Length: 399
Image (cartoon, rainbow, N blue to C red; front, side, top):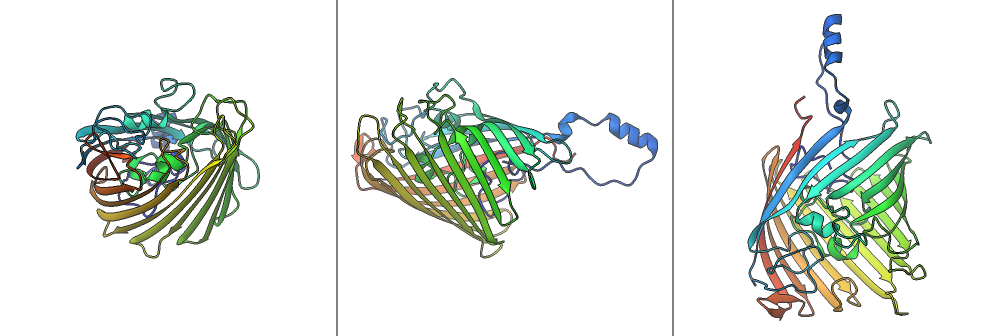
């Protein structure tokens, strides 16, 4: 994720932190004399080809129902006694919170320069606790590593990029970084329907500006250290029929249960983006998952749909909305209680400067089961307001 400019974007950032990290732009200059050329060469640095950027993201959230205690529907990795259920990275409420500090060093492989590249993204804060909380190796094993992989651009056709290591998932319409989304809080589908990351091999190839595909061979969902000896496979297909429309179809299959290679999990994920005008952007996301838990023979399933709309008044002001419906048919993903969830979010963006983004949000969550809290009493709905502040930087900016 290139975080130097955080003005409201037409669509969420690419899943991969390095996927849209552009090389440092060097200013044009007139042809200098020979001594000047030697001086410029002497001051060049290997870091000129490496993108180094990051951000600091904090927020204040207020839950009108003042939940006290930890509900089963609070995602793993959150700590504290006042936590808002169904929130991935913004569960701590009625307090000033550090969502995430991120630092990325990356180099994109290039056929004309070097076919080798890498991505190292480190993170600290509540978001990283949640992302890495369910790894079988334990939270402390790679708690602060968001992504870490090496890349090789194989000389196949236009270039086949092969990555090995830990990388964020290809599934979903949202990303881990706040500035790469349209809303401040993460949606229910992002929190429960899909994984956060994978460890293994990924290959990507762009056939043209309209078609691209990726293939994955990984340990599974959210695990550097696998919980069984089986492997999961995934494919992703992207289609851009016009400059205004984008369609991404993802599929993943493999065993995900502890010490169980016989029962497989399947995941279907579809994301459609449409930009009818330069100011208005629309997006839809559909997810369907299916698995067979340890010790049972009856499959469980979950599915959901999310609809997004964003309108940018100008480069400094934008408003975004999100609606989701999620059916956790067997209670497999949200804490054991079968339930239907709805949520509506309204977000207002103000870009204060090139590096500073403020985001204000109202969100209402609803369930057909009392899986939320009003104080210590179970409730079927909750209302929250949040204010977030994101500061981004790029060390190459202005050079």
